[in-house]
Length: 441
Image 1: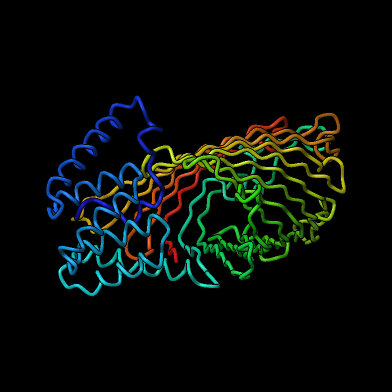
Image 2 (image 1 turned 90 degrees about the vertical axis):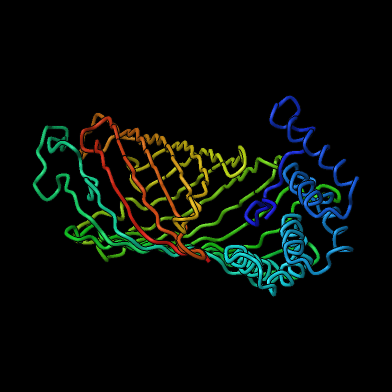
């Protein structure tokens, strides 16, 4: 094939945007030479494919399409030609035209199996994009081992009521493993209004069953829903806006720990072809439930307000940088549980092709780093009446995912948490390893 890829949907930079870069100059020179070669012999299939591939690499999709459609005059039934045109129209966002070409190519018997598989996946995606109601998501399951599954202090020597104390054996750091299931579902319903408004609903759930520490079995369910519409400046859409309602429920040890209800506003704007910004303001009311293991949990009832900003940068082909920051204010029933939290995060994701002999891939490698600062308003008399709690946490993550077949993937994640604190009761560290399978649909 000519090297075009159905997965490469992000537009490449045009030459004027990358002037001064040697590789870009070389590509532009090759593009101009390929254009001259094609003009000399318009019926030369290889010359036209070569020009089309270089034009697509530079983001000139219309020029690439024109070159290949000219070939239809000479080779109207060539499956490779219709496949490449389908890919180009797919990248351009003309999904109905792409569907027509890809469907014609799909009926041919001389395309490689991997190309047939790509066509099937793209036709399925086009159906989803054109549907009034679109549902997609991820389901995953696996095993996780943690060196500190109960998030207990690293040192049993702590402070209670302002004096030194020693934790009982049931509250010290303990390792354990769990089996988990996690799901993220996204539904978009086209309201078929003139402003292209959609109703978007996200459902997330998580449940982890510990092998030994059943008191920290954890379950989480959350639903978020609201309309999304374009924010216009004159005739131009400059961003999308989604006001939403949100509700969540959290179980700990198979007993309700707390529930929360709230609302938020999300603003998403493409700053350039490569940079997208997402800003979110949210407010939630949290209500805790007393239990034998948490007899005073309702003291933590609170209102949480948060503001976050996330920047996603397509650094280069198949590589993405994700940087974000969030600030949260929690006003709790007891002032010593009220706190301010600042979170900073940085991640990089790179996609690699694996050797065809492995029949796997692509491989996505994502290292990530987070720093979390939490400072409480007042000292907790039950711990230390003179010292208020403050924690500083580092999180280091490495996630590796390999595609197995048609949305099914295998992944491994390593994470290290290191939490420093003003009081020894809240200092701890944890190392975890997760292996699992996930299905994207």
